[in-house]
Image (cartoon, rainbow, N blue to C red; front, side, top):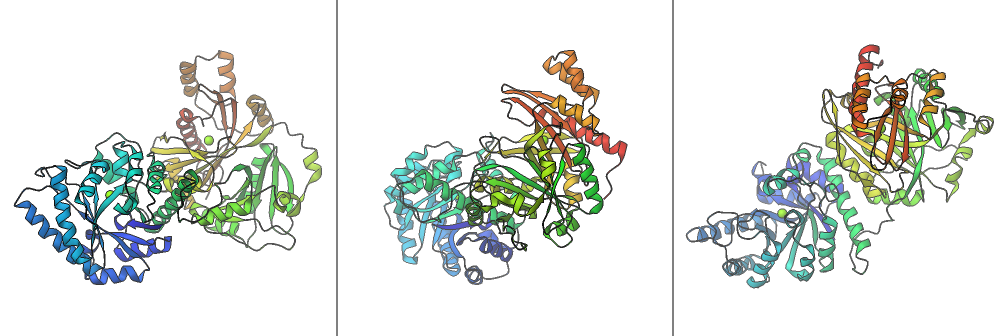
Amino acid sequence: MKTSIATGSISGELPEKLAAIAAAGFDGIEIFENDFLTFDGSPKEVGNMIRDHGLEISLFQPFRDFEGMPEPQRAQTFDRIERKFDLMQELGADLILICSNASPISLGGIDRAALDFAELGERAAKRGIRVGYEALAWGKHVHDHRDAWEIVRRADHPNIGLILDSFHTLARKIEVESIRSIPADKIFFVQLADAPLIDMDLLYWSRHYRNMPGQGDLPVTQFMQSIAATGYDGTLSLEIFNDQFRGASPHSISVDGHRSLVYLMDQVKRLEKNIIMETPELPDRVTVNGIEFVEFSAGKSEEEQLSTLLTQLGFKSAGKHKSKDVTLWRQGNINILINTETDSFAHSSYLVHGAGVCDIGLSVDNAKRTGKRARALGAKTFTQPVGSGELDIPAIRGVGGSIMHFIDKETDLANIWNVDFDENKAEKSNDTSTVGLCDFDHLAQTMDYDELLTWQLFYNSIFKTQKRPVVDVIDSAGVVRSQAIENENGSLRLTLNGAENSRTLAGRFISDRMGSAVQHIAFTTNDIFKTAAQLKSNGFESLVISPNYYADLQARFNLESDFLNQLKDNNILYDKDEGGEFFQLYSPTFGEGFFFEIVERKSKYTGYGAPNAQFRVAAQRRHVRVKGMPKK
Ligand code: MG
Ligand code: MG
């Protein structure tokens, strides 16, 4: 199947849009007249420029308020569309979209509309043009694809067909199974868009909140399964109206769009096994078994600070890379690397962003297949020189320039720690740490709010993960939108935090770091109080939480006073839901605002302590006021 995107979906001048769309791998575009009304070039020149980018014009759109007009408007409408046909022929476009009439003077009537289309079909045929009819969710008389199909069926003209748009069908919750009975050759074009579920005026929702398939809440996959079942093998096109996307980089939105279509086709193919679809073959979505390591880039002085902090947290120095200035710190199943190389990706990350996380290693079923799936979804491979005898670990560039490595147990990669590192065996076997950190619980990545959907689609398309609902975290300087991405057994949990402005702590972190990054790492313990006691004796200073928080906690949960005091004395935050209890403890910030979190999940608590986040942010703000911002 061919892929296409409406030029109106992305920002920029037409040449810039075309370059971004072509680079992302699309076959064609839907062109809006507006796109070249402001461009100095004849329609013919515009058409040639599009083709010079290796793109085809899949669709010319829109033509409004056509069918069912009374006279004299009817004759005027036919004259108007003849002029569009002239324009299309100059451009080199052969398919036009007519959306259902929204004019208050339109008369309605299926047969009247069918007669108008039959006449139009004759005119279009003379020009070699095809006409697709789309039911707008807010059309005056036709706002259901089943009625649009009935009109097309009765028009009974080879140059008249149907255009299906997932938004218009799904926004009105129209049964998608009804698509399966439409003949494929009468479906001239398919437009795809998702959207978050918001209860609002349909037109406003459509013009401002559409997003890429998979980024919203509509059952676009089910819609597409029905289309595939008809045998349709034409173009799949993105028609996305989104204020945020129109302000974002055309390149990154195009990449997201292409990724969303490849992912959608991959899902449909797996769900409709008996239907043959001409789409790329991708390895399965990747099962992540856990986070194998997190790597920090640092200069010598930060390495010292970080090592001190890790030591207080109960980590032991566990080895050194055989050929690189990389040290391994370990506790339980947690591996932390500190990279102080001066000739490496880590170092360039350090120079640009300062000390912080530069690389995440995920443990997957098969590292090679993971890399293959990621590349098929538009991710870029990352390579760097490998020392002799050392492992060549598959890696990709994540969003925002970070690196992600893949380790598996099926190959030599299982031996990463003793092949690439001189492990400190004595320390390992003598690991008597009583801090009791067991594993990674979650990584929190902070980004501009504009990038949140990009990250979400990146993870969910490559990995077998799901998104949770967005929660708002209130910072005194604004709102941070937080969305968790996680797999079924919780071995991969990521929280994506989208900062809407640079005055929030999250926003300041990304502006200081010059880009999105991991802002905190949470570890698990099985006994938060024992951990807290040991941390104290190690000289660890936890983030000081306001007494007001504990008063509020008491009011919310009616806790025993001994228990409440124990939480308070240790600066432990607490939450409870139907599943169980949750405990959180924070470190002060390091570097540009990075911090560690320690959590204990009791029974089946699956959240992240969202009600506590605003108290944590307030405590960090207070900490910064008292101690000053960490040096840059
Ligand atoms: Mg449409
Ligand atoms: Mg957290």
